[in-house]
View 1: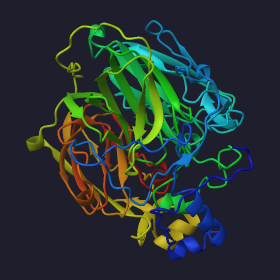
View 2 (view 1 turned 90 degrees about the vertical axis):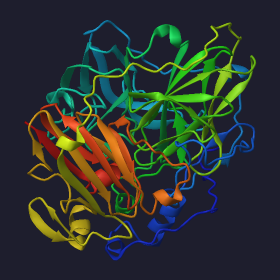
View 3 (view 1 turned 90 degrees about the horizontal axis):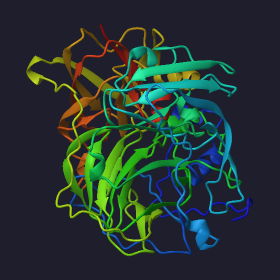
View 4 (view 1 turned 180 degrees about the vertical axis):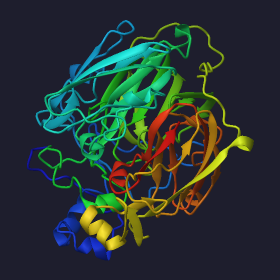
Length: 550
């Protein structure tokens, strides 16, 4: 593909969004912007080898972690030819692995970098990365140890780092304006915290997150200590993201802050990468038992990832162990910010390629491969290990203090009015003047008063009521919650085999349109904690609040 070649977009299953009246007044709208949204925001291109066909893989039914409704976001493919020799097909590990002794500082420099996301490896994309890398360096520690990260900001924007999913001291949570002031350009900040829980986590900014994450600022945070090392032969991390790129390979900067994205399904990309590569290849050996840590770092897209023709078991969600659950061909659904850990015993022969597939469009699209090397003779394992539980207190529903989070607004269900910065405004003014198109309990954006304030040790039951036409991924800071109950809405009824994570502990919960989800947690971590939609344009457009534990 040359830099001048436009992306090839199929119009199959494409639904053209209709802008509400207030959006027509936005200078970015009009025919050109509408056409741009059709070309970019509703599709994603996947890169495949040698004009390969889609894998013949049945989707839907079976696993409770199955296919989810597409909400008009059909993922499509573009057929390309990857040029190169077998040497170019070698496995590429994530760069910058950090696995030093406890308390040894990790150094992160937030700066501009270069990446190659396209099949034409001569085309570079300018990114923002930790140490200039996408994903950023793996930060690795052990349960109970202290982690120290020294951050230097070489960007022109202030930034922070949030340690997603870690039950952390409030002062280290990294939320600009709530738990710390952002790190100014040219300045430094040291994060120092203990990690009480083993599992798969990640880190990213919490200042202008909708832009900084989309430019590449994220990395894996892995805390060991949940399994006997003899149970796992190989541990792989897969960081999945979708990028909105122009045909030149540059990040599409013109649509940052686009109100259409903010009021619909967020910033959807047109190029999918695993570990920052257009077609990831990871080494395995037949006979090995492999742990795969899946992390969805996309701004807004819900992904569904699976391993083709392998018997995989789901062993953890959002870093928290579950009883091993066999995952069929449907893969695992991951909303933005969610994680899942899979375990599989590699079958096949040396030289085989095991496809890593993305399934959310109803087709099995290849996003990468496990490349099989020489076979090994491993132990005869009859069972899949249950990971060691973290010490997370279970909520007592009988003693719970009840609270409610009502989500309103967005396209198709226009926000008629909400309070913003202490003033009650109509929806048209909110959108035109302030870019606010969503509300929690009638409040657009962060208010001066918390959603609720509770004493330390209180059990909270939060009813999350999605009264919008769009899915949301609600993230709670500083705590893990248990999914207590789901009451399906319009969207859930259309999701055969959809995620039923009732009873599991999570830090981010997916909610479909009109769905009501009850979560419960013991508020045992003092401080001011953010609660927001992790479809980041929704957060920027009004879906952010906070609660207090005293």
